[in-house]
Length: 116
Image 1 (cartoon, rainbow, N blue to C red):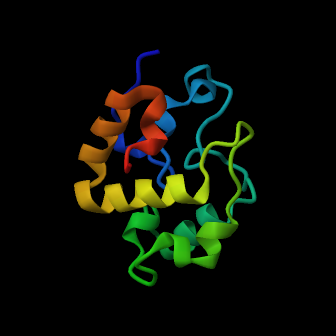
Image 2: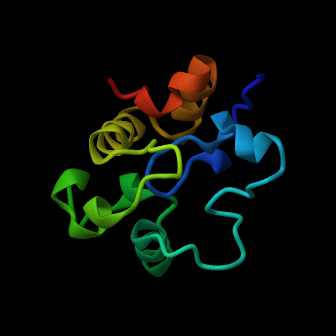
């Protein structure tokens, strides 16, 4: 599967939606494009504070220490555990959105582990 390099495909929690087969097949718009609230606590928080992702949050320096971040659910396949998402947010803070997207796209299915 070709993986797009697009910073707009970085989810609020730090996952890279560009590598998602559901998104590529048109079965999922991604959390930032989803018109109805999906019940994700991270999405609600980022929207409330106008953050592009948890990487923009100055209130909590370590996402794993944030109750909102740790309450967020994983997807149906079990991807997006707290350690995976926290590592992605840390990498996103270090690299910036464009570079993170390029790295995640380059790693394809390993995108959510880009921070390791």
